[in-house]
Length: 193
Image 1 (cartoon, one colour):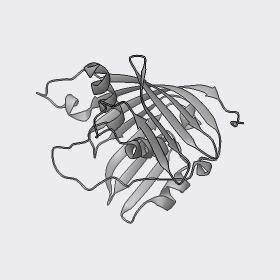
Image 2 (tube, one colour):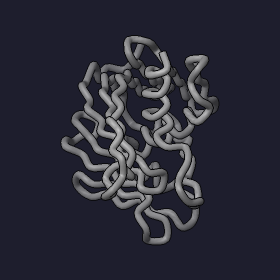
Image 3 (tube, rainbow, N blue to C red):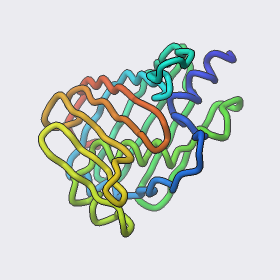
């Protein structure tokens, strides 16, 4: 059970603490309809800390989590599953973010951060740009998306397919110190009834 909770905590919260204080990433709360489509994905998420790549650091084993992600014009829904158990569900309707968490899931597992990463990875660039605070810029060019603050990259996403959600992606959050490999399989593109 402890391994289940540790795996989920690392994957969903990524890294709640950083070695030095840094300005916070912008919180995104984009309307589900601004995604512009409906999609249902089965995903395998593999997380590792960026510090694992530094010379002399003790390397941790990457953590793996299965996820189901559904986006339609009215809601974004995500379920995280580790070792056969649901450890987190979240639902965003454009107004209210609801989440259900395993009782032992650490407080650092934040549904807002998960929603932010989903939206940064998959939402249309123009929708994201309109929601960014001053000083933040989104660069978006064929297979690479970068979120920058004052010219410094805070987060980048590399894609293997177009549309972006149809294939694999690698999200590197330099600001919060994690790398997330996302392997996606399309379940459906039909609107939910």
